Length: 123
Image (cartoon, rainbow, N blue to C red):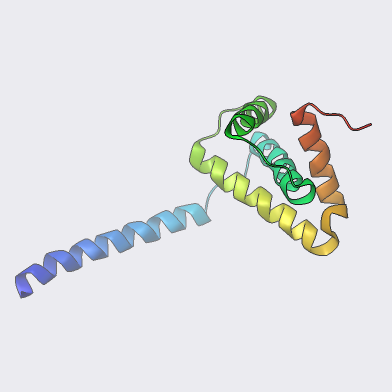
């Protein structure tokens, strides 16, 4: 039993070290570029529309929105980075809503951005 414990222990240590390295890399990620901030800001609009307007999107809707957001941001962003930016967008909107709900200036600005990419201009 002892002979098998050492390789298992070393394997677990390697997995743990790898996990720590990935977490450290994520914590020291470069700040978002201007294009990434644009990408994030449009996703703030999408999330605000879901939270404040009850918007529901089909998979086809998501594809159209994502294509338009990518066009507006001007760059292709790696999918892992996209997820980070989308999560950050949700946090931004949730923080704004915690203070003033859907009437918060940040939320209203996000909804304007959503209307722009959705192709709808309110009257």
